[in-house]
Each structure stands twice: as structure tokens, then as C-alpha cells.
Length: 253
Image (cartoon, rainbow, N blue to C red; front, side):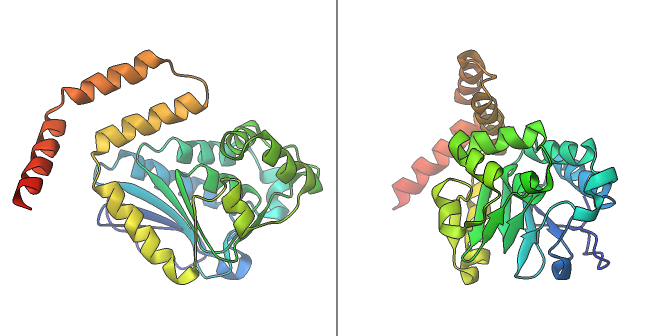
């Protein structure tokens, strides 16, 4: 996958560098909203990352410092909000490599669900979120409700969806919506530390465990699948190579 520079016309951008694909929302003056025309482009970015063996992590973030994303454009909800948005988020959730949401500001509406599709969610101090679906009279789609319940639990999902209340940064961390809450100045450093840690791990094992953790959370995998993957890793040359390297490193200390 070739490196792609930001387009600069408000459409989301994709850059690929050093094994990391970064998808960024590029409308900071408009709270990085997601327009209907963005969906095919975002889906193409996700699909390209999914099949690129050089990509070890995918990062989602927003331009500017105010908002990660305000989700699907409000004016387009009636008439243009179809299943393509749901399918995009499902594709993000299915990405085989680790995914990180670098939440650089407020996150609202459908963008909250997009962050829940990511494995790791880093928020900056001052971040807020809310889900206004009930205020609009919109019953949220099934995949989004599932991700909320799986991530923050039924009680918190009810509070968020049934009240439309704004949730602050400390509360987002407490309920598990955020993995980390950091000062804004530490976002890049924290993100870099996660990427380095991801790259230090064996990618096929990462992908296998991510797939099975997600399946277990959804109630759809038995012990036999996990057992088979575990035993295959025990017999792998990569395990032997990594353990030998670790043993040698300890000997040299």
C-alpha cells in the first residue's frame, strides 16, 4: 500500500508509514463530521489496510484539537443514513490487526460507536461524549447497541442511550469507554508507546487472539477453537525463535 497524503478538501485521509495506517477525519471546523460521500472512501481505506501485510496497527483520529468526530452528518440522517455506515463500522471492528482510536477531542453520535470498534481507545483530558439518538427519535442499529453493551455493560449503555446525557472524561474512563485518559501533550507519546508494544508482538498470534477474544465476548466460540490455536502456537518455529532470543538476552546481562 502506497503512502497517501491528506487530500485537503475535507474528506478523510489515509497515511501509511512504518507499518501504521492512520485514518484521520479532516473537517476540524465542522467537528470532523462524516458525510455520506465519505463512507465509500473510508471503507476502501479499511479494506486496503486489512489486506496489507505490512500494516501492524490502524489508528483513527481527528484533525485539530476540539473534536475527534461528531459522527454522521445530522442533515443527512433522514434519507442518506443507510446500512453502509453500519457495514463500515463492522468492517473496522473486523480488522485483523490491533486498532487504536486516538481521541483528540469530543466524540459524539455514530463516532462513539466507531471508537468502540477499536481495540484501544486513548482520550485526552477534557474529552466528552454523548449519544443523541433518542433525542432525535432514532432507534440505534443493532451492531452499535451490541458494541456498547459488550464494552460498557447494559446499565451504562442504558444511561447513555436512554438519557442522551453528556459524559465527561473521567466517567468515560471509569465505565470502560476509554482505555486510557492522558493529558493532551501526552497523546502522541502514549500512542507511540502502544504502537511500539504492538509491533513487538508476533502478528499471527495477535490476530488469532483478537479474533477469539471478540468471539468469546459475543458468545460465539468454544474452548476447542482456543485450544487449537494455543497448541498450534506451542509448535510454531516463531515461538522457539522468540524464546531463544529472550534466553540469550538474559544470559548477556
